[in-house]
Length: 128
Image 1: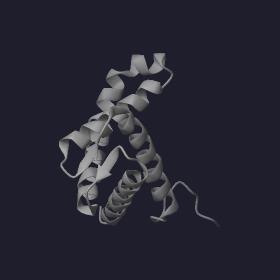
Image 2: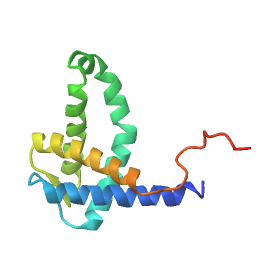
Image 3: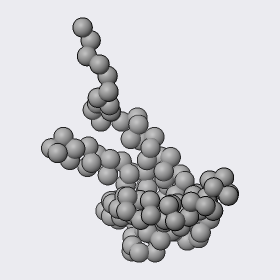
Image 4: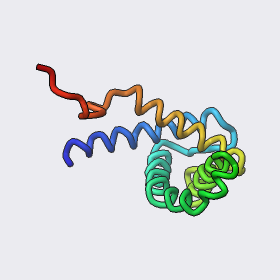
């Protein structure tokens, strides 16, 4: 547990930085300051952990029919919803939310991948 807490804090900071980058690159996404980005990143993390899997399961038939496109819309909807809930984070339109959510996901993944956070996997066998 102790090893996970610093990793969680680093990922949270990286996600807030990714959100600030998205706000800088897109007109439709605004973040007032870094504390607002931290709150938005934490809220997005909770929403993506608790609400997205349930909605993804409920909308699985339409996601299959649209060959996965609906999942991007679902991601944008959740990004937009968090923007409506928080004061320092604003998303002006639905398509800005779809593109912003996609860009945020790619940037957060890229930052987490590029910054070494310790051992990523313990599936390797010890050498003799």
